[in-house]
Length: 145
Ligand code: HEC
Image (cartoon, rainbow, N blue to C red; front, side, top):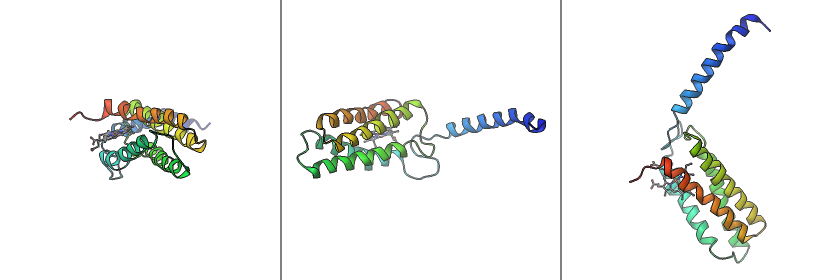
């Protein structure tokens, strides 16, 4: 290896670490870094309505294909939201990341599988995982009013 280049490696590592620290520091919780949508608006306009409709739709066994399709629609939207919540510097820590990925994302993905199989019990179980994400993230990151 070129010795001059090699000597620059530690500097590069320091710069990388500083860059990482800066990007973590810029995580904004209430909104992302560049995109204008506020977290509260995404919650009120997308996450809450789809979660509420899902809860209602799963109270009894879905009666027909249309009812299953509706559940699949809500689950798809919430699955995408799990990605949005992780983008644009919005995510501040592992509590947020776990809630968004291990609960909201994994729960909604399992729900989509259960919809595919038209399995009501599995759908309710997956919804339970998805719904745990709300409390998990809010306990640390949503201000109490
Ligand atoms: C990864 C983090 C995270 C997850 C997961 C999450 N939320 Fe939120 N939510 C927030 C944050 C942060 C706020 C506060 C935003 C603010 O104060 O500007 C919030 C606020 C809200 C609000 C109040 C919005 C308003 O401005 O009126 C509602 C309603 C809400 N969330 C519903 C839900 C539901 C339902 C779920 C679960 C399906 C959920 N959230 C999952 C982070 C999350």
